[in-house]
Length: 144
Image 1: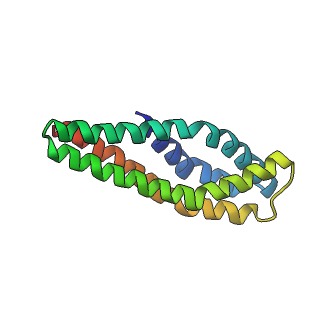
Image 2: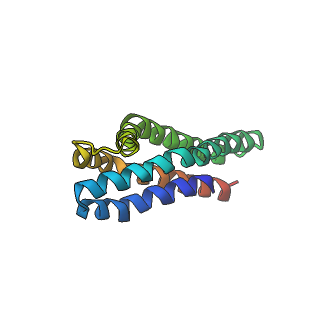
């Protein structure tokens, strides 16, 4: 369930936020994204940590129960979560910080539009990874 929150958030960003911010002026874009990331980056890590812990415990539990197919599926979900985390840490998080710093300091980043394009560039991949992760976990539960 924790991962579903991350998936839903990323999916909303890909489906709605990206198009809305593309139509916003640069000041609105920078302020909106600054505040979105100010609160999101404070609150979302809890769901991510709970998700990773649940996946690891699921892998262990299914392996100990002898359900190797489930353990392998959950393992592929863990790989997807790791890849998502790398993309987030290397690409999305630095952009988030740039928006947050600007809004907290009350300034407009010079490159707000370019920052957002960089963030948008990986959101579909993040959604795909999260979607795969959830599907793999659902199948892992079903094949016990």
